[in-house]
Image (tube, rainbow, N blue to C red; front, side, top):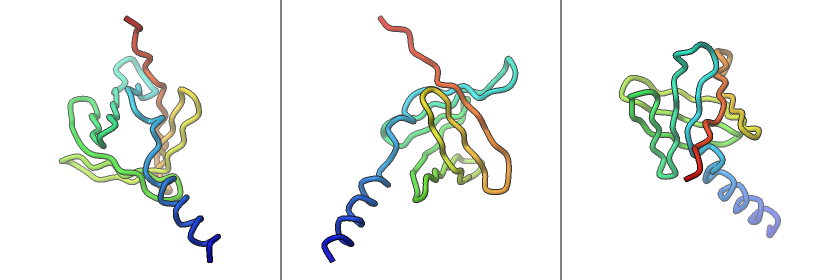
Length: 101
């Protein structure tokens, strides 16, 4: 029983979010690539469109904007992020590094 309780607690803690997503990401492909910005308070900006994001289970992320809601499989490795729609498109991003002041 204690093992089950520990697993539930770890699952809740693990599901609270992936802080490595916070910051600005440039979508791959073309000179006019859209910048996505994730804030620590659950806000996201896709270009000029504001929305909200929330982490789900099994590495998923839900992104809601006034125009659409999408669920992606999230994978971050260093400065590379991939959002994969179930059975659909794969979006690839590179982290934008902020200049040090």
